[in-house]
Length: 233
Length: 142
Image (cartoon, rainbow over all chains, first blue to last red; front, side, top):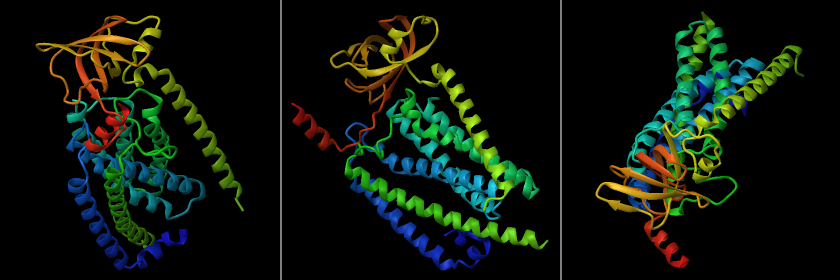
């Protein structure tokens, strides 16, 4: 499975696959938007602002997921010195960072009509903001440090430290009193979202997940080319 | 299969990860008072020394039939189903403020049973459903 990610392999990956993924993304997005904006009902308390959730929740999830993968790749990178791990991690950073920002902004838009305030420093919102800062730190380490080996080491350490933030984000709503509500979808019990709202949420999640894969593959190709060019020098 | 170098790195990583985990745990534990966004009425009651001058937040459910409005002044009771605190507030209420729903009030305690709020936030719970379903649920309850 890992063979797939070798720089040579990724370069021979045909653009057809990426194009097909883009088509899949567009189809999912159209279906997801129609379902979440038109077909799904308003919430019994929030009214139509519940529709913000269909972009907010998948974005938050993907922001956490991408950082988790970056952290794991960084561990493999530091311990086993696998050459393509830093390229893999680096390629995930931009899309994850974007989703963490989308999560924060859409959350604000939802918070104003629901809570009556744009932003509060409760444990969930603060830890999510810290995740965003970790993304920024990670990306800027690559940009600022020009020596590949040094940048690789520094960014990996940042990513591994950032891993500790992920369980804090996930469980913040259970460990402490927060203004943010606890999770509606858990592994242990039935979701507290009605199925007419769960379906658009899942479609939107799939759409944005496919989008993340597309961006990741595109970036990874670029990183692989850069890596090869650097080697030739 | 693992070379000595790799083993050393793994050990180093595990030890530093454990240390970082412990440090983070201790820091969060000692800052718990600041990490929690609000206190429940029971937590307020159980607190030995509580400052009446410091701004705090209390949260819970708005007790049913407790909202009394007089012009812009609103009185209501926050309950966690064990203890209650009476809140008085003068200002705009968020749209989702309602009896039986979650609320967070920011302000100062007068005493352990009386709170003067200068901000009211509505807290939403984790339930999402269409209005018809909620009505059907209400009906089946009665």
